[in-house]
Length: 227
Length: 180
Image (cartoon, rainbow over all chains, first blue to last red; front, side, top):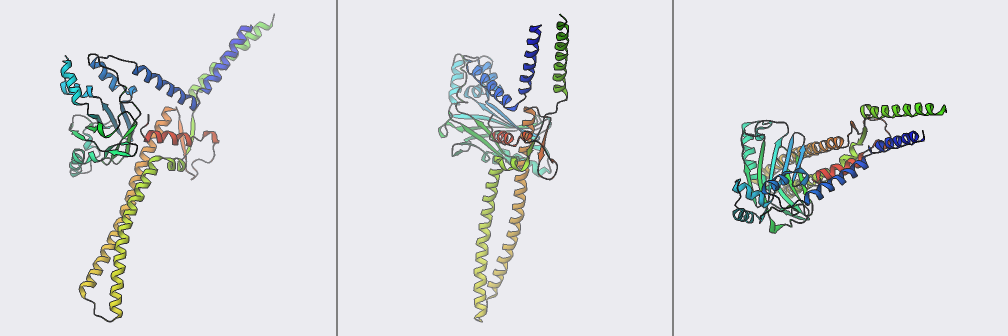
């Protein structure tokens, strides 16, 4: 009987604990701990194949890809390390490692990002989204091709850096998003330290869209076996 | 000897109550909170940044208007001096003054409209992002309702413990800065 009483007491205690778990602070601490666990787990991975490396890079938990929803639009910034760029260039299943290494070296002077603007739950061409006139479409194409590069910049401390490379990839009606590839010169900022990439959206007037990369987030990457 | 069945009954009743309470909490408990809209709006980093940008633009425009206004005053003074000295004023100078005055008034009106439009644009941008981040906060913390108290009577009373303005300000500023 005493045992039953103790079990009852334990159940009541569990109930109290469960209720207190609804407390916000607890949730926050828990999620922070979870993030730390994810980080440490990922950083311990080593000697991956190229395919594993690409999968690792595209995994949101590794925080190389950052996404932000504002109303009906999604802004996505993905860091492309040199091996990812080399993969895009070579596009082959069987890797010739000297060639792959050469391509990696070719991309090592810049920090490459893929920036995508997307309509959430939308279809059709992004540049035709909520279009008010045909002239506006031309204006949007021109903006993305030439003007947009002045509205994307990297901020580190008090320094502001415009992209050294900028390329708008036009997809027409194929997908409900538009993509630009941009790169910042490694000599002009410190990749090891915290920085923020800012886009001042003038296409859909959403204002400043910021993506923060913490210290060493871009350099603590897994190794690719053979490289 | 009769104590055992009584305690067993109490225990089973307690257990049933506990399960019922858990089910009730899970199914019918509405997690509610409120924010002070003005406080959150003023504490939002984006608002502070855009406010600075707006002031910078407005000051730049005011500077141009001040300069034009000063030139107009000088011209006006010069014309008055000539008029008082009973010197015939060349028609070119009068036309120039009239033209400059028209231009000044036109520009002043245009700047007033542009300032109002810029202010409206920034307000829309701030509200779009603020609303988005509050929605994300609500979803992340399993809120059913987050009310906005703006002092117009939409929320007349609530316990202070339901006020999550401070937490929201920290959250929306981190989201705005792009911090995960």
